[in-house]
Image 1 (cartoon, one colour):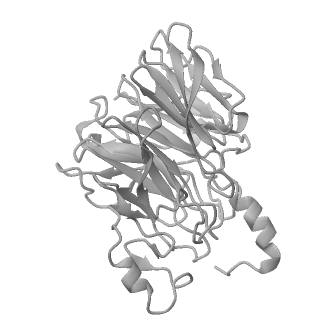
Image 2 (cartoon, helix red, strand yellow):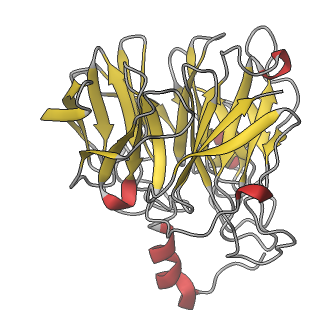
Length: 380
């Protein structure tokens, strides 16, 4: 792939500033085009969820989703357990790109572009109130979404890079930060993560794993997208000096310096097709899916924007061994969001984002281009 000309830089910088596609325009979706393994049924749980991104289930089992571009968080109750939302309830509005959602000790936490706030949660009325500012987050540049996770009594928040590849002036960019639940005790747990979007706890290792989006403009097949285990103590994961499995970035490091800089950074647990844009990440611990799908990782590929032949636009799974380590590479689980026979940029029928599993064992999947929440269940 040719390197971009300087004449295109203003356009590219503007585009990259929205590379998370939190403001994705709604597009047509066609449920009949989606393909899953035999026995799995894909249905629409909710429609008209504009720019649907990350999701979480409330303590009472109600699905909440962030409409990042709309600045809203909505609830999608299914009190009759019919597999379809009864209505859409506006929980919060006027937010600054709400993305990461979590519940902890009965409170609702929302990560916006520039901050994390905690709310009192009223399950009976599906209302959030009494916002409390817990943390201010870095702003500006690209990669505007902020993901959120609780584990082991700590709060973890990711902030992607401000650029495609650069040395950040703000040390909080391209990191996963750790906080106490009240926002105190902030520290950088992991650095060198260009854009960590999916955060999930591996139940076997009891550590936080993340999906990371690699840099652009190294061609169609470099660098690989990766999944990292942050471990107990985090560390340096390489960006911007390294990509993939500790490969020096020759376009960024000086000749002869990259090997020394990269040899001690942390290696990924899995490498995947470049430019797939892995976002949502979830470990399946339920029993509704067949046994071969349990103890698997599921990853939502949002899809490429600058590859000569588009890739991604699907959900993949990775089998894990008894110790929670990947066995082999990513395998297709749900495909069909890319228009059939499409070989040019710009024609898709949906873009998967977030993955959560409900108490019913089914998968719930958000699509920010179609404004849809899908429900995937095994019915055979």
